[in-house]
Length: 496
Image (cartoon, rainbow, N blue to C red; front, top):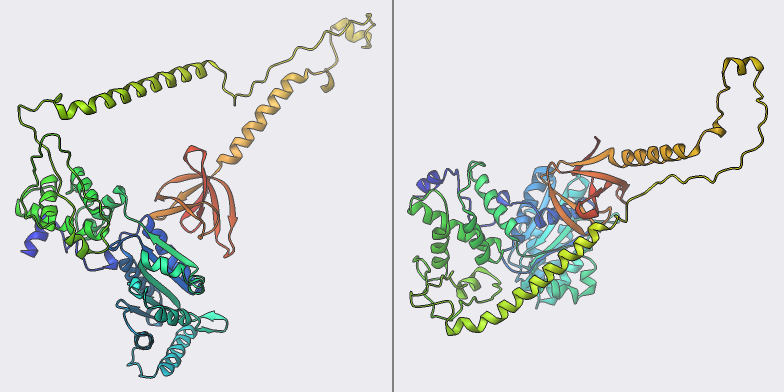
């Protein structure tokens, strides 16, 4: 059945498996920025990194696995790492497990011996030109184990020749973030930080499309309708793990019904199935005057989501005897009419204000008008100083520059100056060459991200600078007279 299911949708392999898979990671938006910071921390030996999220299932583990895959591809056998995904250990057990994963050997029972072996192995990797990272996932499980956190804090201090021997990455949910802030001696050793939030609708749509295309779907084909994507996003509350689970069940329902496109019906059956209500469509006839209610929740993991499922999508149907102006509806009619009346007055006032402004001269218009000179009294006629032969022939001597009217020269000079100024600011542009690029508030990777733009965007360059690492940054103009900075690594400067 699995092969038939994949062939039916034109796929090569499963697009929506729940197991973390770095190759299926859609690195856009906040994930692109987090991935940049992780690579920055490793390349510059920053020492410590913390990655946290508002809820479970936001992709922390997946992006860490993708980071490990990229480091393996770049450094090969000179890359060493330890990935601890079940950190409920004692401090001695934690050191022993990290030592065994880094060295590839069975750790000793003595903690001091393990620390010595670990440091020697990290020094050897550094001398070979490689990199080493130590990753502790599910770090929220250590919030009550302060002694283990202190052991990990000291582990960051393994240095050689005034450089950190490894990059320590601690990952977990919001509770970990809050706990580390209560430990300033540890928080200060984690200079690179990132916090994941639930996806927006556009990111949900991009995640589903990306995974389908990676699984072999033709990029020109759309198999999820717009309403299906909206329902998935609303039900999942922007959590990638729930998005993946619902999308997978919706594809299975579409295969069973032999439909060519996933719509409301298939997604609705998937949501009901996950909520423990069977696969029937969630059409519910509500009592007259009773508004459908939606339970607000913030699931911390998949198990919690199954224990406290979100309510199914409800459609309210009214009988033929139900009218709009019944007793339950009349009480809401007056506030609605008052609101509409207020909005009407606001619209009329705004239209009148705009009409008055339209009659005024724009403030930013530069008006250059010619001022008439006061008439100079005429002097007595003086005999021309020209030679007599020139007077007879009617020839006159050329007018000097001082005698030329100055008004036209001033206007021409002003126009030339404005033309040169416009040409100087519009000559250079930055063309985005990366699939997704971040625009920041300042010329540095640690500056706040303003927005993310896609490949092919063309932005005017207003200025350029270099940060403390030597990377060149371009100041570019954005919409609404806003400006931002983009790195030369993701954009190419050129002239029009």
